[in-house]
Length: 368
Image (cartoon, rainbow, N blue to C red; front, side):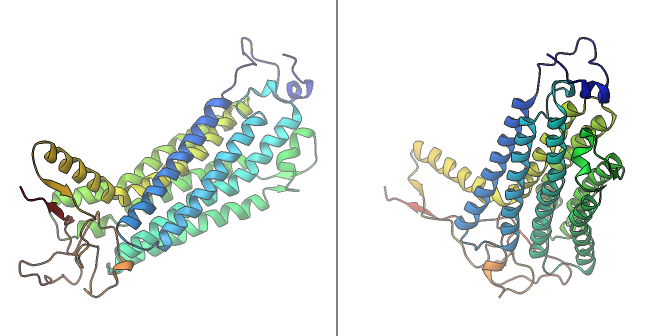
């Protein structure tokens, strides 16, 4: 393969033994598309769970839909970047390919910031609704996390507006244009690390509140485990940081650029999946009950699955007043207010939340 002399002048001669025909474009495209599909399925199941529980769509659900649109954007940019040479060795590209790839990277910073930020906004709104009657310190933690998460995309978008002078020099520098840029590598690396720190902050916001719930230690651990499912996204963030380290130290920048593109698409998709999983537990429980009922019927039992799960006034999450609207508090999968043996509400501690994980299902029993 003939190498462009301009590329050789910029990046040096081709390393001995390097196969310039190999690329990782197909694998990256498949990974980005598959993760986007998984995120879509998770969000669709979340909406389905809402409908099955007869709950209206809430603000955190709508924000998650916005986040998914941004994830589609990251997947699209990954595919477009691959079509321009991201995933090939730099010596197999042309200067105009580098221009297209770095223009894609510039756009990627805006779309990626939106994808991870709207996911965090959705999670924080979910916390606010779930612990509406939470302690003062919970609301302080929530406010701090919200402030940081709002500031993150704004910081990225403002910085990228002034990262180079003129801005076009960011993607035309390999064509010999004149201009100056800030330390792009340091900026992107710092913001990547900050994003992972914010992921951790968002994860730990509700933990102290959960530990104060009036439930057994085993159930507290289970609820914390559900809330900490978002830790999967931290693993993706760490891998993305490693991809940036590789890119900063690489000469073969288009090859390592592909890793940044694909993990910038995988990470927010995993974030949506992790954020949706707690809302899917009602579907899992319903499926389990159906399987159990079906198994029982095969063994001669006459029990059959009823029309729908019974949704009494005590079968949804409620913190504080027993008169709060059912459409405003959900996540029946996690908690439901405890009823006393006589059917009257038990006293709820001033700074606590009385919870139990229970859903009552109705079965129709056929006469023998």
